[in-house]
Length: 199
Image (cartoon, rainbow, N blue to C red; front, top):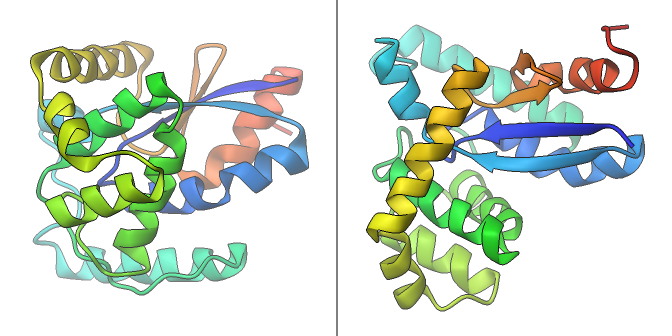
């Protein structure tokens, strides 16, 4: 079965498209995807790359592009969603902790629904708490643990790993050392996993 590493960062708008369709896609293609949260804001800062905030024409394109692609995938979204999010690091620290504990994927999917369907900014305490409720986690101790130095360090380590692999944006897919950037490159990543080239 092909294996793909899915590097995502809560706060990445285009990651919404992958997060919401990935389970069905894996079932359809008989593929295994490993979810890897990292801090894309750290990576982009290192590259002096400022994405869409403060760029009205580019931002308008981004939201329209996501709207078109969401329709293609039959995904519901209320756009534009609040952007950028306030506490990107904490959101990804919770996701990373959840990946170790077995509820990270469910949390990430719930948080993106709250952000893109309910219009609640994903880095806010209310959005994080609601997403944790939806995956049967107690928000207060979970958020306290996620804010701790161990989880902060774990996210920094994951981000360093992503950088060493050549990941520079989210979503990205890594297969056998090859990086495929963008939701629209998921099928290419699968092709590489199966036959070692893009078909």
